[in-house]
Image 1: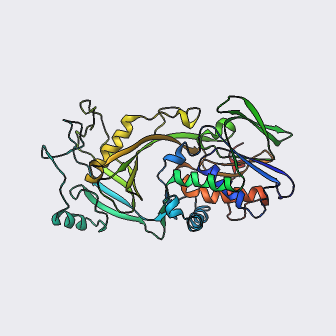
Image 2 (image 1 turned 135 degrees about the horizontal axis):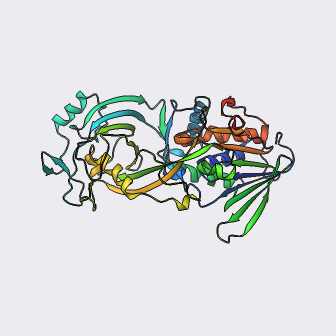
Length: 418
């Protein structure tokens, strides 16, 4: 696997943000020669069909693990400059903070998300001078004006535009795949059923074509597993589990400022449901912690806590969205923001995140115990942030025989894969 001379058949398993970014960096490595190096990406359903298309897209220098975060954060900025990422995938520098708030009751008498105040429904009003003064007294930044003054209790800055940014994960992943295809990447839609080895060396990858269901084999000198939560089904020794996560996107009633927010919302004791099922109240915790990310083009992304109630399905195409969990997220953010309460819900979705079940944590990046078999998986909630560093490092393993851009010994898959 070391050295770049000779014919190479490189197969990437998984068309999420890790696999597509890896493909991009492989096609940009100085040793890459499309006349001698064939790169094929095999994806079971569609590019960015899982968490890569449904994540928040936060980038932060204060993320983890610290040995790849600076590299990846820097590469994100470089890619945005080179390819017009601000327009192509929504790259921008932002503020990030923790927002403490008290939720307001939502009207359960009709299908509208109306706020109740002292038992009466009230309509939206323009922000009053008193409301603005209340926000300032709570330490809320001047431009963070899309939350109800009576709800917000405090704000603590976590990151500023020097340390925090964002991308639209779906747009970024699709762009990485397209840019790699322009340099020679071939994408195949099919489910990998086996990685064939001989004497401890990879030989080929077996997959079932998504459309014809026919079985095919791809010759392989190098195989990269970047299948996220499905990694264990392809390589059983990998200690990677799946966590289901729900999210929504909302077009707010007016444009909002560029913030990523980790909230803690205290709910009223009888906080219930909105929408068509308002008559069947649902129990909620006293405190909820949705994350809220304002995006370019007047979109807000919000996600709730994860769960393990539904096992990982066969592919991203088989993921089922729990509408009630999405409605909970909508209710929570509506209880503190009129702009979101009166906005338009544009997506309700679910995905699965890959978590490494080992004391060392994740992700797992590098060689396995099989020659020619590399792993790039288990990125948990920081896959978008760390995809560029991962792709760069995997390209170095393939063409240089080792990681050169960062010291990632602590992320060695061989330490936890048995």
